[in-house]
Length: 139
Image 1 (tube, one colour):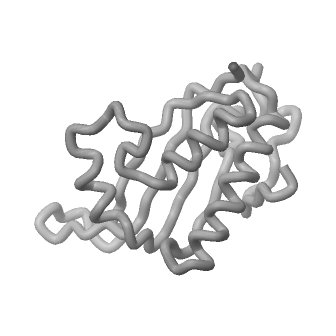
Image 2: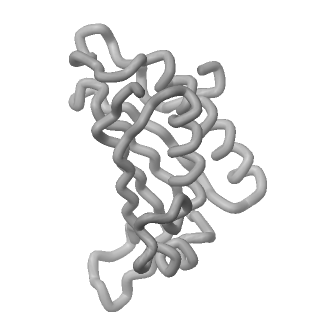
């Protein structure tokens, strides 16, 4: 929990809906993810990153955004036809899933590859990874 960092303010009691998980456990898991992302950034594997728990979703969604992930090309290839595997194309997805499992939290994790410079498919060259965690529950 101490390692969790976000540029966004924490949820207020008014912002929280009826959470299906222990908030402290989620923050502990996200703290582990934060520490891992710090290490990947220090090693030059990823660029800037941020984790947010949007207030307008009442704590039911978490977003992890990662810039300049050098493994995006490999992730796209690994995702092809391998949806049942633990890695499923993304080291960050595997780290997130393991960190949450360790604290008794499960979530659906959807990964998106983004190219902020264009919307044209013929010049699409993604440089950002966006993870969307939803259906967050305690086990």
